[in-house]
Length: 584
Image (cartoon, rainbow, N blue to C red; front, side):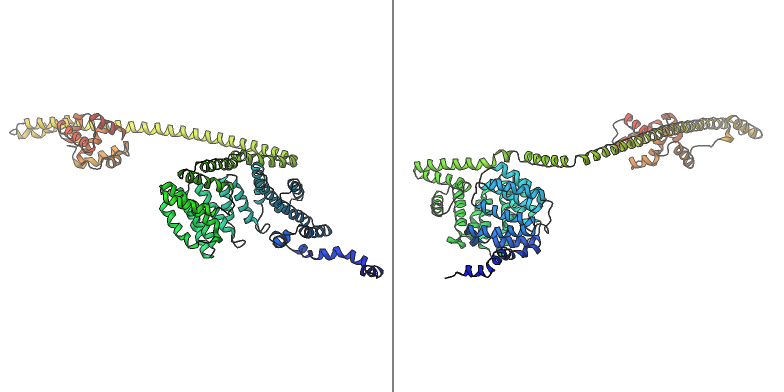
């Protein structure tokens, strides 16, 4: 009996089907050729990333990936070819494939040649995750996560829609290797992007930020972060994340030794008691055990430890969790005189503590900043090698520009210095001229006042002469008076320095000392007019006897004026008053 294949062969249909079969297969993914990058990534995630049924069948999974690869070859689309290679390696990573690192490094070199920045960032981040989770190689994990972040910085959300998720992945990686400051930087950066894509990612960002701030002892910031997480989970009715937020908030209060607040939160936890949330319940009893141990509540401690042991029976624990739980179990067994178990758990706790410290104390962690700088230097070195000629031209141009600017600055500086020197000389000349004019005016003022004093003395002589004249000799009165007035030059001088002569004196004084009166009024606002006249005459350098004659008072009165002024304004002595007047 002839088979169907033979019949098709006889009719020439079988060769045609064999030729068309690859095209039919490619047509299944041909729509990828017309999609944008964001649309392609959404398809890859749905078809391969979260399709666990397909991943469970490795043969079928690789057949589908091969179809994508063939489409890229036929269409000569290198981005699709590289994406299919990435999908294959993504599967290998989950299976700890022995050739994963070599093949991923090869893919990195290929996408570097094409300068596909999105895939450059993703491949490096995937390799960093593999080094951390599968190989425990924290140095290379840090190296590639740092490299990934450099490519990621140049990409917009339009070019890389999953940028926010990748920023969180980088932050998480930095947090795991102990670089908490870098982790906070990328968490805040991820938090700055729109939250419409993968809204559950916001839970992880807030939770990780709170954990870091707790480790840094920034308790207020940590409490704020966990409260935001609780508010968000309440809005979305997400019980699991609500429990996680409450557990971590309680841990903050425990770290801050606020045990009452922590126990109050646990009363809310009891409402959600269910096997569905075993991990959350485990954290509840772990934190309760810590509180009861710290507060010395032995009965409550024993009860919580027993519940904790019940919770961990069917729950896998990582090294960090064992490091927290095993010391508590050691204390429990020691209190109950089961020393063998106590020593066993104490040794195990020490072992896991050392294992965890290997992460934070590794050379990658201790030299994070140095490694960052080395990576940047290597990248810059490659850029310099590729652009050597251009760099030389820029350097020559830069040196020329620097020389020109330096010369210009020197010329400007020299001009400014000379102008400043000329200005200083002019100021000195003007200062000397004013000083000379001031001295001249002061001397003229002193001479005028002394002439006034002499004239006043002459008037006194005249007065005494007039008194000696014999009034009975009336016929000779006019001639004797005229003779006395002629000898004393009475016709050219005022009779006395009364108050109406002070404006003339003050005007002459202010020409010599323009600011003295205004300064006296400002510095000594409470002195009287007579005291101010005394200071003016003293500023002119007159002797006490001369000042007394001008003011028509005794020298004792002048001492009273000086005493009043010193007392009002707290001058120590006459010397200090004289220094004050000189300074004015």
